[in-house]
Image (cartoon, rainbow, N blue to C red; front, side):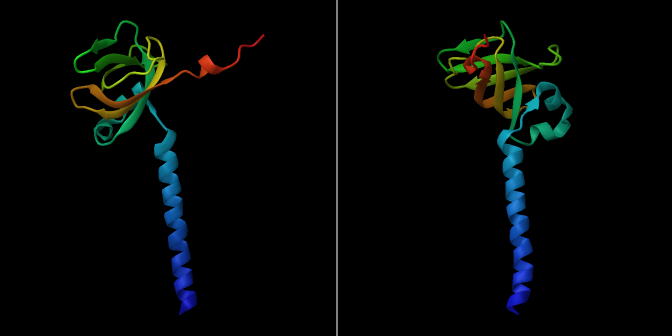
Length: 131
């Protein structure tokens, strides 16, 4: 009887650990490009996602009273594909036109992306210069 429980319990535990690991890896680091977001269809509206792109020059608008920032993300591969983003909160110091950025939030049916977090990707700023 104890062996039977063992043979049933161990695979269930292994499967549960595998699913937890897969879910953590999938949701922990992946982000979509602007083009990929548009190609997702209805699935884009059903979940919180991360979108990566370049902040378009001249697109940043900030409202002091509401701390709302509106800007446009361009797809890096195809700059003609853009996404309007709305973010409420304090923006990082490195948030400037042309910066590579990851916005996390929800894609709305009106075509805007309501970001709950924005993270500039500025790894090159911290890399040592080559002589």
